[in-house]
Every structure is written in structure tokens, then in C-alpha cells.
Image (cartoon, rainbow, N blue to C red; front, top):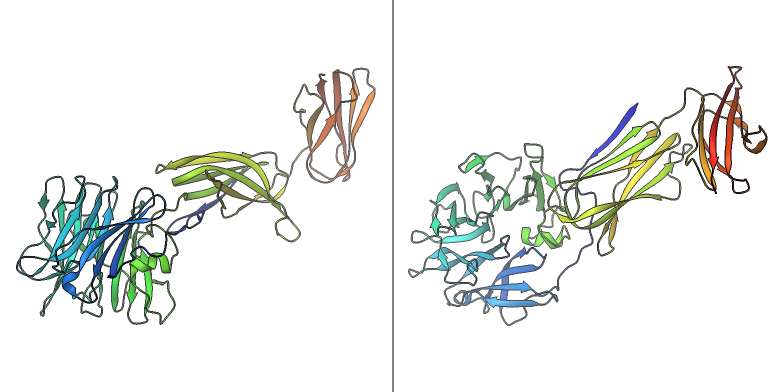
Length: 507
């Protein structure tokens, strides 16, 4: 009979947590007031930051700067704009080829704020691309590049009257702008009050703080149906500074601040609809917006909701007789050398583990990959009882982490007497003999030669119900053919048992 124990790992959980490294704590050291920074990470995990730098509070001196982390941990800074016309509110994304894409606001010839775009997609930063022209002042854009080289923007108008949030895209392949889509009536509070992300299929997801300057209802949109449409969420209250990210499994994650209790909240849609809001900061702190959340709250370097270096989908154990088959699946792996399989037997009397984990197997990993990989390991010839298993995931650099534990029960009590063939056979100098006892019995096992002479007694005692094994060492015997017999007399008065097997010693 087979028993299956199954553990499923979903959402943000990962079987392994990796060690964290942080860059130096100060990137810009100068006489400017540096603020409104926006980080991104390249394919090598290096930090890139766009930010605004200005002299004191003089808005006309605001320029967009960009700093990149070098291989030695230092930073190189580039002045992206230098025109004394108040450039501000940059957002940065990096494509699969490590090209940079920066959206920001800057004044036009009529002194109106417009949405502008800088990229080194063609090799170096050129003149800014005008995403908007004319009309009303534009503010606080949020931008993201898709894998199809389409750049996406969500932004606000900024006037004395009613303002709205808008979406527009720019296709680098054809140098064309999409029509502007009006989303929600909303006032920006001077920070990122709308955000967007693009999934692996280049679908767009947008969150917007609607309402007034100091908060309003959360609005959520996506274009999975082909056009941008508003969809309901479970977020409630007076919301500011929402952030959306879509992971590699297309699960949507949203973080926002509720001005009612001054806490950050989190929701996701892993089950097909959004989860109930989960408070992730204490009450009364009014934490900073998402860009600081990455370091200050979650203490993780990298994009918050990207899968961990080794992302597990499932870990299961299947019991079949006296064996256990372990199976696990990874969705992604990074720097993964191998898994050590470890086992411990649970003490029956206290249902607690014994003191020492045993390493019982080694399974090679697949290094760095975004493909799914399936692994398995078979643990054979176990005795009756409970066992726990865990995996020790080892990186190529020697770092390791342990998985969560999985427990199984092996219930393989025999129903009849049995004497197994020794293994190995032939052997030199020792071999193992297994046998089964279905009832408490007086058991005797002897080894005799071809003349019928007893050369060794292996067992002579009362045995409880169970499966057993005994070692036969023939180092003091000559090579040749021998026989071993098992004789058992049940203590309950049942029928006796006797069986004989042939064994060959070779030296």
C-alpha cells in the first residue's frame, strides 16, 4: 500500500532563504540635494539608481542623474539631463540586454511639464523622447520596459482643477506612440501614486491611487482581455503610494499604504481572486513608500517579488513498503550545485526526532536556470517507524540552506515468515541476510557447510514482529558453498517455519 505525503509551496514562500548582501549605503556624495531615487537591478544583480539632484530648493537646477554599481562595489554617476528646466520624478527599468530606460518629467518650450523618456537602447543616451506634448502639466510618471521593447507609462495631470491618471506606451521598434488612455480621476500627492508592471507575456498591470491628494480608493487595471480594463481588488480605505509587481508565475502582488492606520498592506491574486489585505508593518509608523520598503522592511536586495535563487513548487514523499521516494520540483534555480538528502528517525515514545540527522544521498542541481526541473531520491529498506526528511541545498560557492522538513510513517509489518536471499552473493568477506517474523517467535539462524556441519550461529533469540537483517562475515572460513537456515517457532503456538538458502563465499 502506498502512502503519499505532499507539501505545496506557493505565494512568496520559498523552500530556501538565501544570504543577503547589500551595496554601500551612500551612492551620491556631493553638494546637491539628492532625492526621489528609483532603483533597478541588472542581470548580474548590480544596483542601478536614477534620482533627482538639485541645488538647495532651487527647482530650476533639478536634473536627472544615474548611478551604476561597478564590479568592485563602487558607483559611477552620469548626469542624464543638464538643461536647467526642472527635470524630476524619474523611474528606471532595465531590459534583458541590460539597457536602461528612464521616464521622467521635464519642461517643454511653453514651460509646461511633460513626460519624457531617455534610453541607451541604441548604444548611448540621446535626446529625450517626448511621450506627451502640449495640453496640461504632467506629473509623477511611472515607467517600465517590456520584453517586446515597448515602454509603458502611467502618469497624472497636475492643474488647479480636476486631474486624471493616464496610460501611454512607446514602441522602440517602430518609434511610435500609442493613444493616451484615461484611467481614473485622481490627484497626485507629489510622489509615486500610480505604478505599473509588465509580465512575461508583455501584458500590463496598473495600480492607481484615485481621489484627492491625501488618498483615495485603489484602482487596478490590466489588459489581459486585449484592452485596459478596471478590475476589483480587496483593498479598502484611504490609500496612497500603491505598487504592483507580477512575478514569473504571473501572480500579481500589490503593496500600498493605508492612511487610516498608517500601515503598509499587501494583497495578491494567486488563487484567481485577490487575497484579503495583510498588514505588513506595525500601526502608527507611516512607513516610507515602496522604493524604501525593499530595504527597510523586507531586507532583500533585488526586486521584491522575484523568485528566490532556488524556487520550489512542491516537495513530496511516497511510502511503498519499506521504501520512501522523495520528489521535488524547482521553478527556477540560481547557482545551485546540489541537494544533500538528510534523514532522521522520530522517537516513538516522545514523537520527537533523535539527535542526529544522517546524510543519505546527493543529487546534483542544475546551476542557474529558469526552466522547471524535477528531482527524486529513493530511500530503501527502512524499518517500521516515523521518519523525517530535509534537503540541504548547496550553492557553487559553498553556501547552503536547509529546507523545511517532511515526515512519513513506514508501516511495513510482515504478515508471514520470510527468509531473503543474501546480498551480495557471491560475497567477500561479508554479506547481509534479511528475514521477516509475523508473530513473536523463537528464532534461530545457522550457517552450515555442504557436509551439514554448523560453521556459524547468526541468531538465537526471541524476536518480536518485524523485519530484520543480519550480517554474515566469512573472513575465517574458506571459500566455497554454504547454506543458511532460518527456523522460527511462534510463541502463540502457531505452525513453525523453516527455510534454507545457498550462499557462496569467494576469496
